[in-house]
Image (cartoon, rainbow, N blue to C red; front, side, top):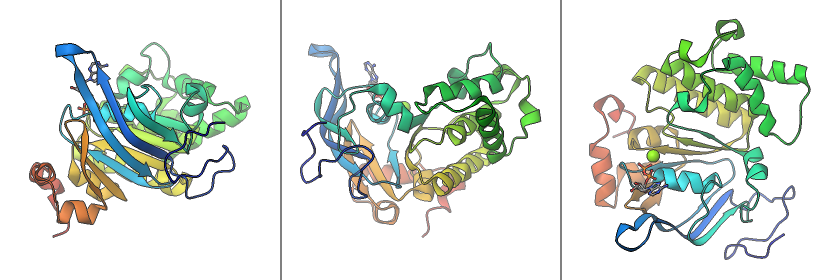
Length: 277
Ligand SMILES: Nc1ncnc2c1ncn2[C@@H]1O[C@H](COP(=O)(O)OP(=O)(O)O)[C@@H](O)[C@H]1O
Ligand SMILES: [Mg+2]
């Protein structure tokens, strides 16, 4: 399909992907908006590989480029410089990409239409998949997904998004992911709207998704405490760059970059005990 593959990464066809080809590879990827005096360098020359089945957290303060990087992974933005690959190939077809790579965004209300019932929207979500399922298969998968996030299907029967709380809606987003079973999930601050208790639940669901579906998860957060708790690898972002990357123990217990040290200081006390001392 393409011979433009990252250095050292084998060229392979989809469907015949050996384990060692990363899910995402970035080589000097930059994303710039505007020009001249109004230029905004949202992402600057980032390079990384994300292995199949890994949970990688992208951590940094507000405006450091996390969501822009997440959107590059989702194929919503094409980098203005550098090379970005999904399983060794450039993202050329968004719809094919979304068949495998799905997202959970910050605001669950913006992802659901207020004028349609939740159940009808969970079912409609299957329209994005290229393998069409039968009506009864879709009903069954929606029921199973609701139960996976501890909601009985009857609880949301006939309900509209505005009838649910923020925490319940966030569970509906996760239910959609459970139903669609993507290979890769990009979760951009999925816990930012909810209280600490619901947040812990959502993180447990994410871990369950990884275990049950073998998903690769990219978890975007400003909270290094949460990242420490869930990830195999942490990327620290600052002003568009990845300034530190490594395993959670290395990054959280012996931070090398002052930005990482600051992020650890900013961790709310209730999460501090997650970072082992
Ligand atoms: N579509 C856009 N047009 C112009 N600037 C943008 C756009 N999207 C993001 N930015 C800018 O890029 C920078 C990084 O944004 P973002 O990735 O959303 O940060 P965060 O780390 O908080 O998610 C910010 O300065 C933001 O204003
Ligand atoms: Mg953001």
